Length: 341
Ligand code: ACO
Image (cartoon, rainbow, N blue to C red; front, top):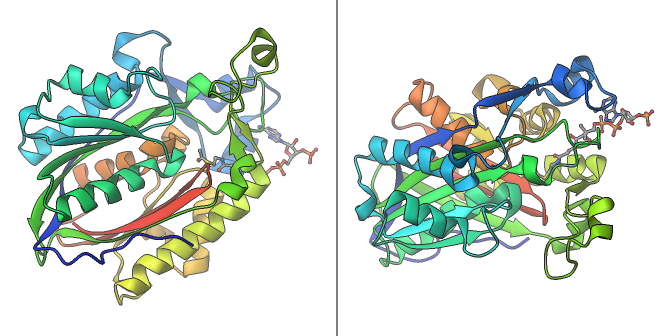
């Protein structure tokens, strides 16, 4: 297990001061999918908890990855009371960038007019938002950055194999954003800890074989769908339950807390049964677990920030509450961040 946690003594800490989210317009229901592959609403709902997901219209300027991120970022900025020129850093977690070069972070910087910010993409698959949040936290604690915009956004529909019923039922498109800013190291509202991990030995659980420098998308690769996601569902399921549980406990125990001290767990939304299995392992009530997978499916790095944003805006999350953000993703990657909101 490799982790990053708060070992630097610093006069600074960081806090999340604004969140935002955005989704494409079009809904794809389970019944719609049943017209494309041999499946049913009943099977998908029972096995995954997903009822519908949002899908970007290909080529639509408002529904590119960075356009969804722009809409989410503007809402986060408004909540934080900040303007784009106050952003020092944009950390953009995605596995489906607008273009390989330049980064989606640079596309977003241009669209937002965040001319002072330096910007980069970060790939930790579905764990990306937490990896970006932990990175922003470290830059802020080091004193180098005051205000960071972090994004978790993916258009997974662009790498979904729509003829594979074992995977195409799971995914959707969306974007979440957060403004992370400098505060005092002992401030009541702050990020309390972050723990990150990876295991590249398990790369085969979930990968896209073609489209990187290892394998071009030749006509042959294209005809075999090698530019789309390939997944071992059962293996992922088991790794997910194990790593989500381990990293939740790591966050709780390293802060000398107990599970009952956590007000909300915001887990990566890959399958409702994974989330329920983790809650059961932790003996944690599902009533305190945020879920949006029923309406949006697995939106990769966007699941946690969009679920967080929804619960902040509808008043479920209240000031002073302790939030456990807990993720896993392809790589494999995994991690948790504990936040006092
Ligand atoms: N509709 C109907 N039947 C289906 C479907 C479908 N969409 N998909 C599979 N089946 C069938 C299978 O063929 C199999 O039939 P068989 O028994 O005749 O062989 C049967 O249903 C059971 O299939 P399983 O694969 O055992 O189903 P399981 O309960 O494991 O559910 C699922 C599959 C939903 C993919 C589950 O394993 C899962 O969610 N895994 C985690 C996936 C995940 O998290 N991926 C992303 C992780 S990384 C990231 O987030 C980017």
